[in-house]
Structures are given as C-alpha cells and as structure tokens.
Amino acid sequence: MLDAIDGVVDEWETLSADAMRWTPPENKQPDLLGEVSEIFAPLTHAITEVLRPLGDAVNRVLDHLVDDDEER
Image (cartoon, rainbow, N blue to C red):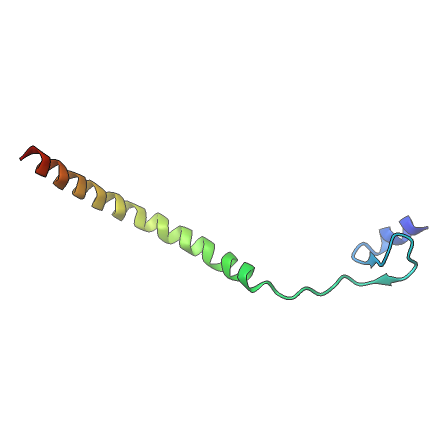
C-alpha cells in the first residue's frame, strides 16, 4: 500500500519509514552564492576567452624584448 501511495505522491516525503502521515518537502532558502555563480561563471569564462589572445600577444612582445636584451 505504501508503494502505491509513493507512486502517486512522488514529491512528498514521509516523516519516518513507517509513518502514515505525509508532509511536503521543506522549502529551502534561495542559495544566493549559487545563483551568483550561475550568472557570473559563464560571463567570467567568456571574458577570459576574449582576453586570452591579448595576453598571448603581450607575452610574445615581452619574450621578444627579453631575447633581444640577452643577445646584447
């Protein structure tokens, strides 16, 4: 019988293994840090991908300058 009840009300949880009373799931407080990371993680990734070629170019220029100084 409990399996039949479980099949009808999947979203409900029992208070204990043999409980005959049902309660709705607890309302969880919104996770502010999780929501902020969901918003800013893709944005941060996109910005890094855009700026990566600029960083590579600066590294090549600096490497070229260092190599020129070592030759002198």
